[in-house]
Image (cartoon, rainbow, N blue to C red):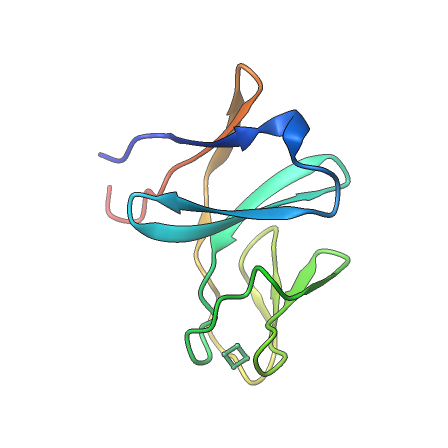
Length: 106
Ligand code: FES
């Protein structure tokens, strides 16, 4: 059973920004868009690049390596050259702190 992992104080993450955190050994990118926060795995399904440093276009992150797009709200792939979704993780805010858990193997 996975546990919630503290990432950052919610107020410390500005709108349109992102941060990468280690959640039980997985690199997770946490984004804030229009006041809401989302967490996806920071690994492109095309060729394994990190994606958090890419350009954010609305609710889509563009992989800096070859330009695949993923929805940061759901992890859904939106354009080639990637064809598989990235993992999307549960996120909550507890006492002002963003928490994420990797529940893929619960
Ligand atoms: S590694 Fe992300 S598009 Fe190729």
